[in-house]
Image 1 (tube, helix red, strand yellow):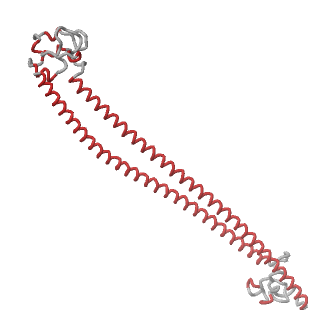
Image 2 (image 1 turned 180 degrees about the vertical axis):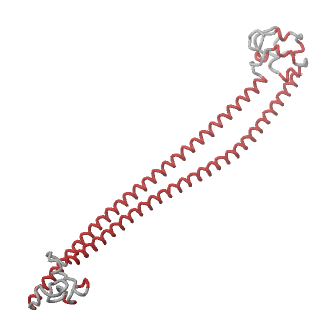
Image 3 (image 1 turned 30 degrees about the vertical axis):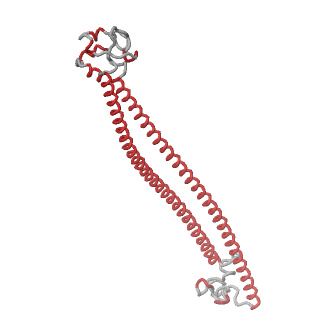
Amino acid sequence: MKQETAEEEEEEEEKEEKEEEEEKEEKEEKRRKRRGKRPLRKRRKRRKRRRKRRKRRKNRQRRKRRKRRKRRQRKKRRKRRKRRKRRKRRKRRKRRKGGRGGRGERGGRGGRGRRGRRGGRGERGGRGERGGSGGRGGSGGRGERGEEEEEEEEDEEEEEEEEEAEEEEEKEEEEEEEEGEEAEEEGEKEEAEEKEEKEEEEEEEEAEEKEEEEEEEEEEEEEEGEEAERKRRKRRKRRKRSHLLTSTSLPPPCSFKGLPRDSDAAQLIYPSRLCQLGGGDMHATQKGQPGLDLLELPADACCELPSARGAPP
């Protein structure tokens, strides 16, 4: 009888173990599939976030570069405008002053005459209408002078004009040189700014990579933590199940009262809790002795027996 029950128990245990293994495999497969999908979704989300971040950064840099370019263009336009105005002012002043030496309209450009700003005597470019005051013509002044004197004066005027033209050219050359130097400085500044921008971009990319690595590590840790938690839960379940069958932490033998008075059923439900006649503070199975049927005990004997833990019932 006992051998049959032991064999049945073994078969049932084997069946249970097989079922547990199958369940475990199914759960593992489901988890693998789920885990396969979850990281895929996470990776996609992460890639999306990364793309958005990169796009925002590039747009920000593009806006900065555009702003800087526009600022430089405005600066150059202002300088060109100032230069043009300066040249115009200088020319206007010279036209009005009539050359050098501070003699009003006489000397240099030769007055207004009847031909507007170009002077009075056409191609000779002298001092207004001949025989006049050197201004607008008319009576008075030096009258008609000798040809030699006139030629000398014209030579002097031409020399003065040439000197003025040379001075103007020198000034313009100096301005151009200054502009060239400024342009070089601006170019150097731009290069330095571009370098700084590149360095900033590289630093941002490195920071992003670090963040991604940290996120991945955190995810791995989370997964490991989940795995450990699952294992702990499984161990706990297994322990509980084994307690129901073999553990000494079950309630004391007096709880056998409510069981059916059938020894097979009692052995199947609590195979290791069959008490030993004559008392004793350990299980019969723990001592290595065969357990006795509950049928052989009187109805209230179980409460009188000591507990499995050795404490009084």
